[in-house]
Image (cartoon, rainbow, N blue to C red):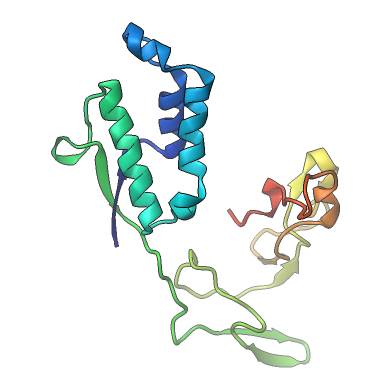
Amino acid sequence: MLIRRPILSFVAALVILCGGLSVASAKRVERTQAQHYLEHVKYLAGPELQGRGAGTPGLERAAKYIADQFREFGLRPAGDSGTYLQPFQVTVTAKPGKDNQLSLTNYSGSRSLLMESDYVPLSFSSNGSATGPVVFAGYGITASEFHYDDYAKLDVKDKIVLVLRYEPSYFREGTQGKEKTYTHHSHLV
């Protein structure tokens, strides 16, 4: 799927939108008030943009909004064909292949695992095969702020490392709201 989006990331765009440009005219300087920044953030993070996922109408509206703001600020386009948008390819509907398989072999024999119930390939996984000893590394996290290190006493060199998804529950203690928020340690990448 071909996506068109501003060359700068949304974060960089917000910095430009909110930071005020040193070459701005007096009229533009007036627009750099806190309320103006907040309106940009509210729109870009609002429900009408539906989370801005790749390939969604919300992302397209956000791209157009940011491009319009660049134009209003007087920035020169740097994208293809003199536009504020740059096309790029992104995969949005990855599905497991028919030949996906995972099996385990130990001292008592070999066992094939079932996709979806025993394992789930990740959409950013690549094709390939691996054979080797497996070592279990808990959540696979080293988090000095929690005095936590799953790798402290493990030798993982030249081994397949098996980890749990997410993070220990006490990492989320003290987070706000009904649903406790996961820390950055729970991210897959």
